[in-house]
Length: 77
Image 1 (cartoon, rainbow, N blue to C red):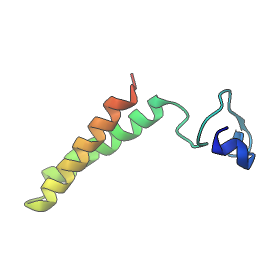
Image 2 (image 1 turned 135 degrees about the vertical axis):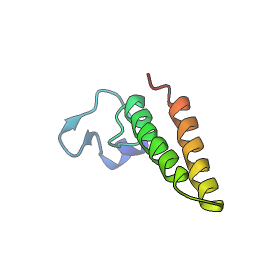
Image 3 (image 1 turned 90 degrees about the vertical axis):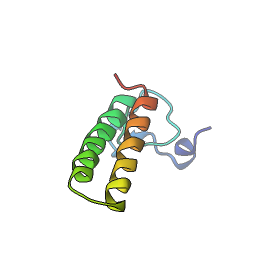
Image 4 (image 1 turned 120 degrees about the vertical axis):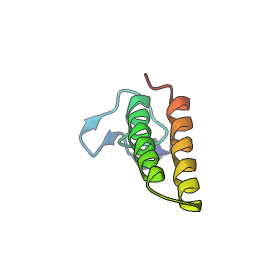
């Protein structure tokens, strides 16, 4: 039994009916939401990396790469 059911959480924000039995109730209802969020964050990180120098650029670039990988693994179309 998923943890959400044990706590009696079967509706998102208290009023959106979930048609499946999710493990965790979250606002990311399907993989496309996660993919879109990662795309937005990834392109933002690329822009921030372009404006930095040194290790800050490396950090933003790593963040952009992580977002790209998560977006790809989410199976978003």
